Amino acid sequence: MPAVAERVDYFGIEGLLTDDERLARDTIARLVDREVIPRIGRAWLAGEFPRDLIPALGDLRAYGANLPAEYGCAGMNNVAYGLIMQELERGDSGVRSFASVQGALVMYPIYEYGTEEQRRRWLPAMAAGTKIGCFGLTEPTAGSDPAAMQTRARRSGAGWVLTGTKMWITNGSLADVAVVWAKDEQGEIRGFLVDPKLPGFTVHDIHTKASMRASVTSELVLDHVEVPEDAALPKAVGLGAALRCLTQARYGIAWGAIGAAIACYEEALAYARDRVAFGRPIAATQLIQERLVNMVTEITKAQLLAYHLGRLKDAGRLRYTQVSLAKRNNVRAALIIAREARAILGGYGITLEYHAMRHAANLETVDTYEGTYDVHTLIVGRDITGFDAFGAAT
Image 1: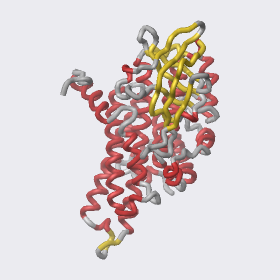
Image 2: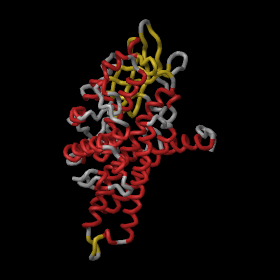
Image 3: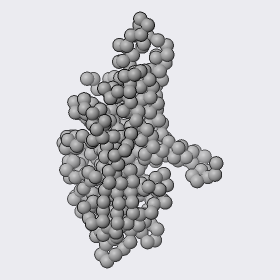
Image 4: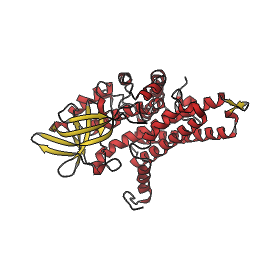
């Protein structure tokens, strides 16, 4: 199977990539074609994450691939990292989400906010996939407004006591460590590395999902969980620290959504060429051509956004509002493409032998998490107008 860029590259972005970036993409693409796509429909239907992929992705250093090699990571640039996320989500959003949480939401804060001892302890093992992490920020009543979190951190002796509930946590029951965010007694938000095996820490998986079914999603309950002082990430202080982690994850999502969109477009195009109705392929009709042209247009726009975003990130000129714009645009575009692909496939589109319906269901979640479409609208709106509309009366 040809590389993704050879299939959908209407504006010649392939020529802008370096050899290392192509190699990173194509290495993951081969794994996805061989190990993910042939069986992900069954795993999704069963509500099971394909756990045997964990060491395979670790062997390819897909976790935290844009973090330094001195900690066992791949040390790739951010475009290469983005292309890895794209290929993983071409397989399934849940697979990309697993790797994205591991790298952007757990390894990144350990690298950025942790001590050297914490980095050496966790990052090499997480890069190899022998240790798994989850990120505990969202709560049952504090999703889009993380500042309203109710989880508390109280000093006690030589450490802290954590109490609260976290919700919608990817990798929750798989995790060897949880990055948990809590408010201290002064109301300051802090990040902690918490062992889920500690007394008072319980994890409940959510089994009723109609989306992201090939992903582990959990509730974390901390009932007076005692952690030592060295469990705190010393520089993870303030809501801004948590939000910077989300910026890292949203960057990967902006790339990942392109993979899902490409998978749906490819499938719809192949089907339309082969499906004969009223004596000719449906691809020869004006209505189907318009839909396919709209798809490839939106994919091309998303590719150009993600590519330039990656170059800005590598140059140190990235602004979080630009990530919001790209996440908002690319995920919503991918969701619309998935729905249109399902329509082109007709009745076959509702089966899991095809992929569009699964991608469409998954993208409903991706459109919601890491900042909803509307939240990112307000982030960009505040940036361009200078007025903060969060919490404003409507």
